[in-house]
Length: 228
Image (cartoon, rainbow, N blue to C red; front, side, top):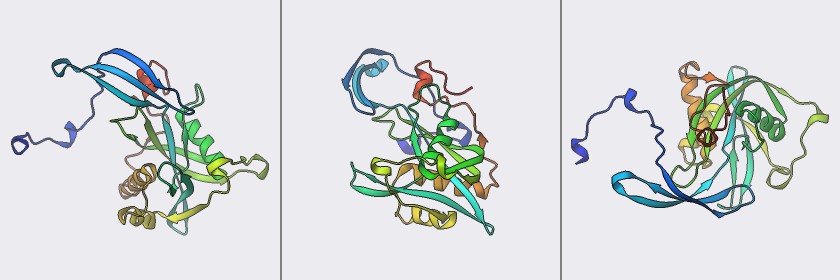
């Protein structure tokens, strides 16, 4: 019974990479942005199972913070997300879809394209899987500080869902409260805001270097080097 399970310590809570052998694999669906793959997986004593999942290139998101009279403000953008039919408040974010581009450089590009900003300091805030039961997507959220606006002639022309999207600054405390009240639903925004709020309470002692290794990323498993 679960009541008889051992008591673990925090140090024991580390996810373990141990990919099970795949005896068969096939492309079940070829999409515009990502694909669906069908694998036959050997689970040892549990036998073989067939699993379909979104084969995703991975993504980054950015908690961009500025200090205004001693108060931290986070930048949020609003985009329409058709699968759920919502205009979501989100962090600037984007796919790792440029071959050979390092994650922090992708984050800098997305911050430029979606928010017309550059940052003088980059740190890793947190890594996570968006939906590990059905997608290989791994995400890294960066903390961007020492912000500056880009020149008018360097601004990116936004199209599709990004065209004319609202952009705004909100006090980190108020953003944190909005998450707890259930007002925000985008996982990157929820995780990024909660983590930034908690990290700030520890005087940012939990931050990692911008080029910290990222072994969870699916491209690493495929033998592609994405971080030093």
